[in-house]
Every structure is written in C-alpha cells, then in structure tokens.
Length: 107
Image (cartoon, rainbow, N blue to C red; front, side, top):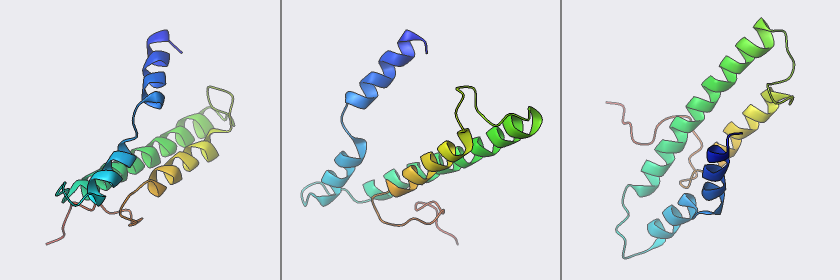
C-alpha cells in the first residue's frame, strides 16, 4: 500500500467516530438534529449499494472470468465483501435495516 494511503487510513482510524457524533447530536435536546440520523442512514444505504455492486463485480471478474477463488490479496474475498456490507447495515442509527433510502419518499 502506498505510504500516503497508509497514512490516510491511520488518520481515519484514530479520528472521531461519525456514528458516535450522530448519535450524540440526535440525542441532544439542544441540537435540533432533525434529519441528521436520516441523512447518516441514507449515506450508509448508498454505501451498502456500492458494496453490493462491488461484490458483484468482484465475483464476476475475479471468480468467473479468471477462475480464481481468492482476491488480489490472497483472501477468500466474497465472504469478506459480504461481511463489509452487513457491518455497514448494522451501523445505521435509526434501527431501520431496510434497503430503501430513508430520504426518498414514494409519491
């Protein structure tokens, strides 16, 4: 991994938790954080969609076309990619685990 990427990831890991901040702000009676939890969850929904698409591309191009059973790092990548998506879904703050975007309203 390039040093700049490694440094960036280290800063992300040691930085503040966005989820914790959202929970704190939405619980605060002074914040008026209306919509913050929904916006946070909408972001996670889109990240889940990205991760689902990424898993599909990886399965198609790595498993099918190259007939490989491991990813570029030598790991069994499909279970790992699936677990990333599940972890993302579990991080939602509203408790709504549906796959719909909480900011989109059907009319």
